Length: 164
Image (cartoon, rainbow, N blue to C red; front, side, top):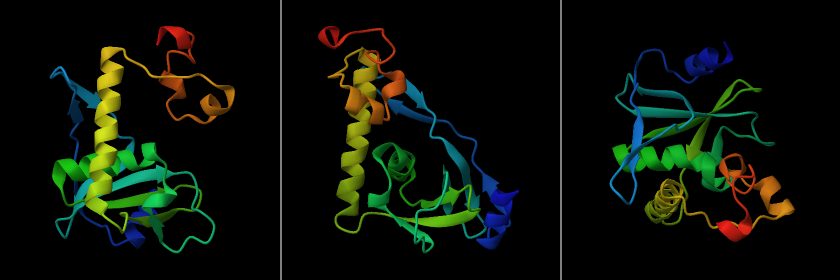
């Protein structure tokens, strides 16, 4: 209900939803499907491609916008990949606990370069994961904070640091 209300407050009344899957090609030419974890992906009545990601709560002093630097790499990924694939997108964030929509702002200095670097890191990670090549140095402090921990072979016990 909060999401629908936030969309109405944001002026989104009519839209055409996208039900496409997102694929990325690994180094061997195999296409891999990525789940982008979006709660909204549609073309609005102005013709803009709107992409909405979920965040638990708005940051303190939230003014309706959120800068590139406020998000972690894995949170930027859907916006970066879709921008590269479709060029002009309108990225938004929905803050669930607050019921608010926020406008995502691309990095100010060299935004295209930042998006390209981020997308390249993602492609390298896909290549490494699909080939079974992991560069990991397990460490209690780092592993507890790592966004890839749940798929890490070291963390789930499928490998040791010496074997990766």
